[in-house]
Length: 353
Ligand SMILES: Cc1ncc(COP(=O)(O)O)c(C=O)c1O
Image 1 (cartoon, protein in one colour):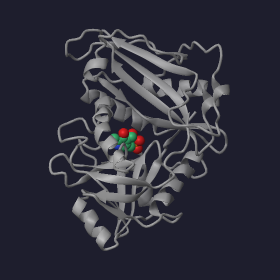
Image 2 (cartoon, helix red, strand yellow):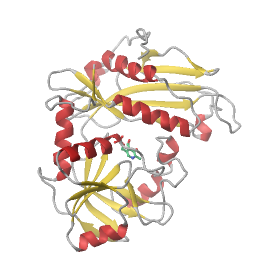
Image 3 (tube, helix red, strand yellow):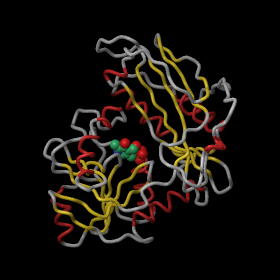
Image 4 (cartoon, rainbow, N blue to C red):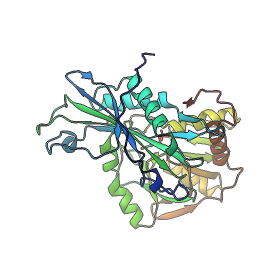
């Protein structure tokens, strides 16, 4: 691996960490002291810098503000039982970031800038990494910075990483609505990429579902509105006839790293898994026959988000209560044990600092 020398750092003169109540964290409320910034222009990357977290100054004609060339990642660092810190599956997040960038005609951030940048940033702000089940959320993102207001592929970009202590999320089971009017992603579109537009475009249907008393939507395919794709901003899994079933990743479904991790662990725990399309009809039949026992979202923010109710065409179908023996909770426990360092990290997922 091409190693960077120490990244130049301008430290804060005053740390904001005293302002954080680590017993009452809220997602998105606090950010750590420093951020990593690296600019791209004339076909090459500049030297990254670590700076105090601060506002940006942008021209109103900055391209990203108009035409949406923005891509992000969402990943986490964990404090292990022995006090060391690991960044979970950093390599895989980098690979996905590069795939997203490619789809948006944006240059790849080199692996050494991404991985070592994260590593040095998290090390510098290590006091901000809370004890599990809380964690340090890491937000790498990149946007087009060229200042011109004609539609074009930008020639200039900024890559930034900031971090934030966050609590464990979604402990309460949620109510989801199968969405058949609005879509998140279509074949040939950008659904597999973590580009900003996918999220902006999802808000309307989500707001409508919330107004109807649901917490999130279950997206269906854009072609027939027949097959389940994702759960809000997460992948989705079902336990149908004792088999863990999840829709296959495609160009309209994000290749979730939690999804991949849980499928890997399920196979090791001798839980039968299937990656195949799941139709609304199949779900309805499974409810009628009492063959659906679990449904849950999977993602970095929550690991698993249990679903208690699925609304299909105005009909609310209820799942049985979950307990420690639920497939979802067994998988979550196994994943958390690896992150804590109490179970062997046999897949090399923990990037220990
Ligand atoms: C649309 C979407 N699907 C799925 C996921 C889950 O992916 P991961 O497990 O890598 O967090 C996310 C979150 O990153 C997401 O935004």
